[in-house]
Image (cartoon, rainbow, N blue to C red):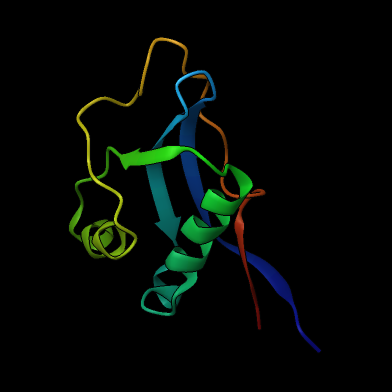
Length: 99
């Protein structure tokens, strides 16, 4: 039997007019670091919003490697453009793991 539990969350802003998105937070429960869950979450985010150019405002050591592997550059602005929508919760909601 598998139990589903919330283990993380990705927050981001998008502008469909400018085809840009900014990742403002990636939070994965420490137990699931180095399991590929962050990569899966960001890959899912990209598939939900195809055609957007992604950037990130994250500069933490814990997310630097993930963003580098996913080829997502960092930016200093949390809003990619004047049209940007409000911060949205993660890729189809929170990151979920089976266990």
